Figure 1: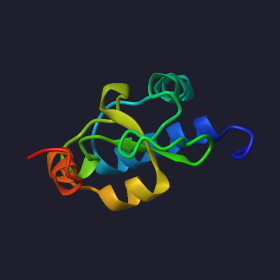
Figure 2: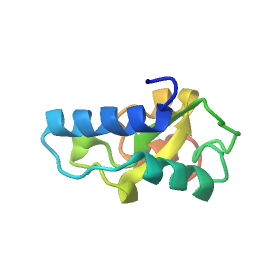
Figure 3: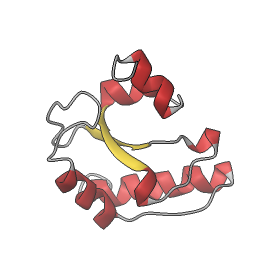
Figure 4: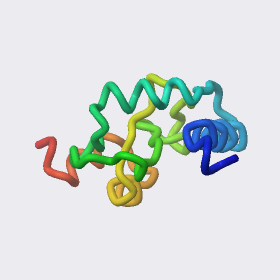
Length: 100
């Protein structure tokens, strides 16, 4: 089921992590597909094509008080998501030379 329904599995796992963290909100597989289309199938950080190899990232991490809603989500490639971790989005952008 998980292989055939990757978007649903991603949404389920993010909702579970949010519940464990004690923050509100949720999103669906349709929200993830809409994000994929909005981002043109590219990583929000490095802009490389992601196809199936992407991870759903909370822009403001749950650990820092972010919510599990579509407005706080972006799709990142595995490398960028691992590098970002639970960093503040401004700090992450600065580390990557995107902000002064």
